Length: 256
Length: 167
Image (cartoon, rainbow over all chains, first blue to last red):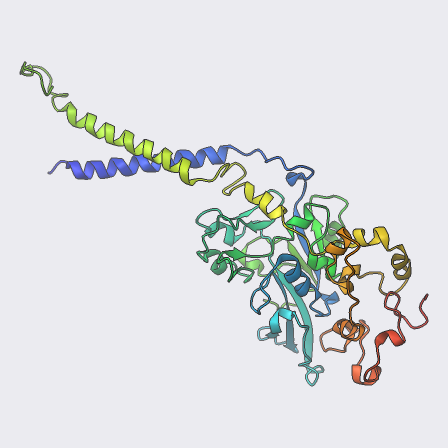
């Protein structure tokens, strides 16, 4: 039986030492946990989400335009932090809805189902980042550039993002895009620059029917609690177990 | 030990006879450990991990962006007449900037005068008949409802649009 030779010994021990160092550093991060001081805004006092009343959405596209304006989203199609989808479901055929979203609803919706109106139902579904509590995008980011803030907003560290696109693939809701100008990822951050100053998001500000409302689940006076208690609530893709904080009322079973 | 003249004791335990190898390896390990911490100091951003697996400065970066929309409260500080006109009407719900567009610049500096939205284009974004809109939502067929070239404002008041509104 041959003894361990010098090369093998060095290799094994080197790996052992390196990994011990990494584990020690990780433990240090896990043990620390105090929140960073932010003047005038207590991150731990909020838990942001959104409620969407599908039956109030008129498909005007105001939210899409407002979002692009507020957050400097590229105006070309296919770059959206929020967008609106139109569903048309032939009566009872939940498995095969016809879905369209021309330019994300930015220009509104051209009439398409006028002849089919009697044969099924048509409705609009606003979509955005679901700010999942167990977000897949956050878990796959190799550098910690996507994370959930202490107040429950899934956001991107644009200075630190590598642009590797793992998170774009991981998001089951298709809520992320690579900004063609900066080559790093971008997505809805619930207008973090607004909600931390006491304003609502640009999309909620612009929505004329109140179909979407920013909510603070940690605020006991927020209307979200009555909404969740009294309405029939669904989240998108509950089977993904992502624990979203965007709650839909009146969501049809055909919506993906 | 290497470099000594006396030979090692022949009868004694031979455990440390080649200890030089161990010292060399130990020095190498030490160098690797030092290298690791130097690299960590160089490459890991300041404060990384204090709140979670991310750079806490990113929160401030995302907070410190300019706004395009000033918010309803900012508008209502000056435009009490519009608030009053809207209050009881059917347009009490929509915020000012839902129709007037993003006006944070105007709120910060009132000498910047915003343009007036084109009524026909704007109104029809929401009120043109479209399959899929909730049945209760007021919708018109533009070709039948508005004569070509006419403006919605010829008959309706934007802030209180029901016919025979308060103003």
